[in-house]
Image (cartoon, rainbow, N blue to C red; front, side):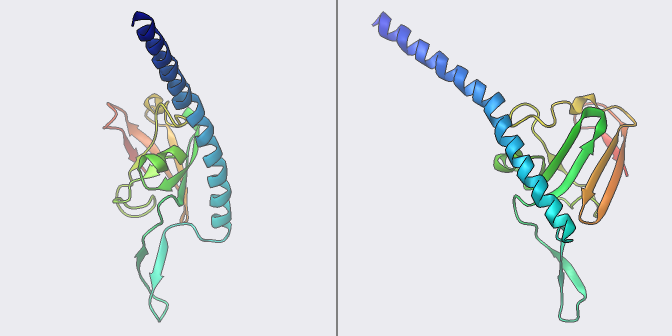
Length: 168
């Protein structure tokens, strides 16, 4: 039984090691492939003036509201040169969406609209696009490209992970 236990532990150790390799290597490949696809989609939608937000109009052509953005749809390009971040963000913040790129929390306004936009981004697995977010310093510039243009922000204060403030 000792031999069987030793073999079982060896198999378990190999499986855990393979899982770790996939989480930190394989998911990065998936993320990079998704970002490439999203970048093409983002450029095409930007050229066709079809990026979110999508407006609802009445019979007279007057804007009556904003239509919900489809989950997984590209909503913004986020660039933070000081940490080398250049990502296409998608609508939605579940694990499926954040594997593709930073995810916009649906209950918050899109960037460039009135209010605070919230994004969720991976710091370890899934390509770890936001691994260096803690390196942001006061004065760092952030550019967010949306269907309404480019919104520029500057980091004005840095503290714990929950207290970084931005001004547009």
